[in-house]
Image (cartoon, rainbow, N blue to C red; front, side):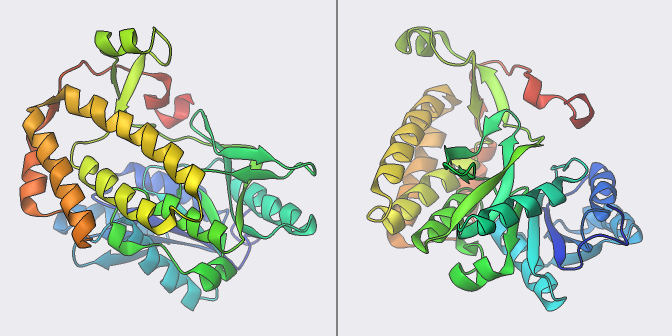
Length: 327
């Protein structure tokens, strides 16, 4: 597919925060697959001026938010912009995502096949991100339904936004895509996956699995443990409580399973944090804010606590941390 033949109604929206030069190449690769690329800078400030100017020279549209408002708010700003251009589908991406050639065609085909088979598709995503499958169920007709889809690489018909709304901006970051998928399912819409399509994606920082955890799990499971940047635990805990409260009746099994898995992870993170009291203070603040309905960006005290946390286990290299070209 070239620029002249790219579908007129498909537009890409990329959220960016302090973007690096690699984003310019990624946008260049994407331009031939969509009608336009919109990069929404989420309050990076003047430090991003050079990269954003280069992006504009490649033909991308750059929208700049005055302050850091979170990934959902950034993507929503881009979605509204391309809807004004007449978009009928929106492809949402993170700044570090690189879709292989013809990926958009595969995503469109997945939506078309689902519709032809009588399914109400909310969106289409690659079957795999990194080495992780996004498929939860294969229908008798071959349709791949999704679970825990990530928003990067998600092709969403505008009719889905009309039906359920855009992303929930007050979550700021973390569980934004989970909440959106649950909202779609509550409306009778299912995510579908494009068979065989893989989105190269980092799974996060990997750290050596501590000896005590290997003992507890009888030596089973991966040899490493994935830990988020410390400030993300505020959003992960707060937003988990908020999402649970919203969907615990409609999706009881999903909520229960995810809560157990994440609670175990939070416990592991708490044992590895130094100082531990700082992460426990972040957890308490997250619980308090969830109960009080305080949403949006974490307060400065929480961010300061997070900045001082280190993980008491060595970081390790794994295949998913390799550069895009090696994948």
